[in-house]
Amino acid sequence: MIEWPAVIYHSGSPELILIRDESVLEKEVGQGGIYNELDQLIDACGRIYSLDARNKADVIPVDTGNVMPLADFLGLIKAHVAQTGACCVAKLYAPDYSEAFTIIASTQE
Image 1 (tube, helix red, strand yellow):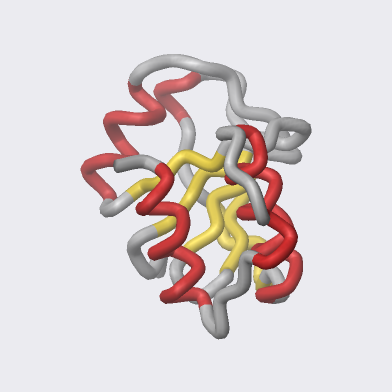
Image 2: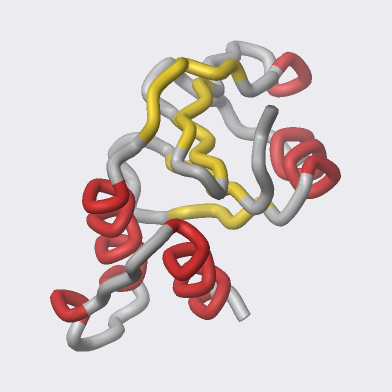
């Protein structure tokens, strides 16, 4: 079961899309876009879900059984924040996933 919030990570792109709950996920995948086998949904506990789909209407997160280490997740967040032009990205730190999601939310407000 997905723990909300979550983010969508499109492989090869630094952008992270914050998904606050299941209704937002349904809206996001319903707006178009093609997901491939490297795209992921990462939930509030770091669990990784695949988003592979050829048809946007069929995108259903599938639990991979893997958890992204917090350090790796922070690396994705640093890349995401850096694309916005923020400075001091190297100093960005969060002690847990909850704080990491707070950082992501602050970039999208």
